[in-house]
Figure 1 (cartoon, rainbow, N blue to C red):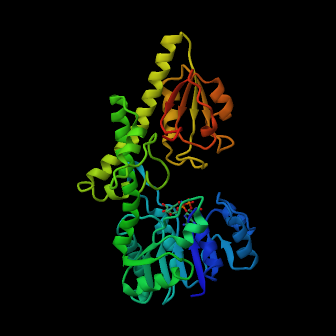
Figure 2 (tube, rainbow, N blue to C red; figure 1 turned 120 degrees about the vertical axis):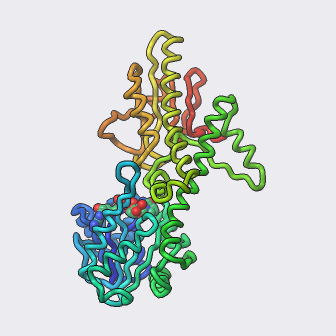
Figure 3 (tube, rainbow, N blue to C red; figure 1 turned 90 degrees about the horizontal axis):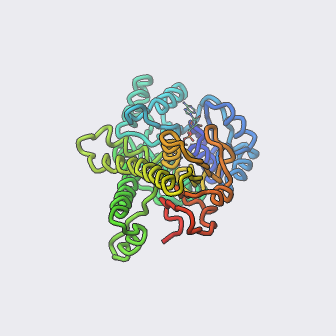
Length: 403
Ligand SMILES: NC(=O)c1ccc[n+]([C@@H]2O[C@H](COP(=O)([O-])OP(=O)(O)OC[C@H]3O[C@@H](n4cnc5c(N)ncnc54)[C@H](O)[C@@H]3O)[C@@H](O)[C@H]2O)c1
């Protein structure tokens, strides 16, 4: 294997293409249907936020080891890393994976390796194999097909891409072996061989497990609020048990993985996935619950002081210290409060983004100083530096003071 082709140069495809070129020594063709991404990549400019990665991109581009294109070229291996969002009613949308698969079919030859890395519902690799073999029956039994999900944490991608363990599910044993051989050239973590369905489910289960764990913590936070118990203190103490490890509650669950992937299970196994489905509902409900709490605090303040309060909504992203707003519960809460109760002077704070297309953003120090009610939605590092002012009403949904 010498020439390899990545379809999709986003948060997963681009870093993997760079590391495969650098560590694996392959000639990499990077394909994206976004012209700007192709143009930037070929100039050695990273279009995603990822510390330290641009240097390596520049190096592999200058050495001619990585070149981006709008369409695929003839290679020895094809790796699909395109988005897998959901449609209305949380139905998984695998149309991007299908389009990417169709785009490489004309270039496939005997002995080639085809890998899907996109998070996918169980059975997607079979479906894509059927599409390939229907178009090119001569390849059936003569090429290698595998599913290998990605586990990287944005912000720590260079380390994790090389060091994380990987699960590799081949259509048959020869496919698993071929895919293992490929990943072993740039992954130092252990490679675990399985079948396609188990590998597909493995990725979905990893994120569902996190979602269920957080739902338990979020449920506790609402119970404790009623029982007038500090949930953070409670969890800290319960975790002193040697076999208990309760996660931290927040204002909901967001992002493109944990808040999305469980639906790929509940859609296909609705009867059997009651816990997973309930966890999704609890985590969504927690955001609505937070919005209600804020609205009640605003009304209470108005009654007490006979004026509308200044309210600082601290954080918009889906987790601390990033600029990603996808599926963010904080963003939902801000929208909900503004829409249903706008009789307050709301200041929206997000230190990790310069501007927002809907909301006017306020500097975090200014907003905090001016606010009568401060709502901590996301525990950004800047917020932890603020001195707690006992004269303000503080609603802390993210354990800003780290109990
Ligand atoms: N971002 C993460 O941290 C992460 C982690 C693990 C798994 N995943 C999964 O990996 C997959 C990719 O995620 P991502 O975050 O890299 O997405 P992304 O949106 O950042 O990147 C996908 C890229 O694919 C391109 N694209 C779409 N269709 C194409 C086509 N037919 N041909 C060529 N290019 C095409 C898009 O223009 C985009 O640049 C998803 O299934 C996601 O769930 C993501």
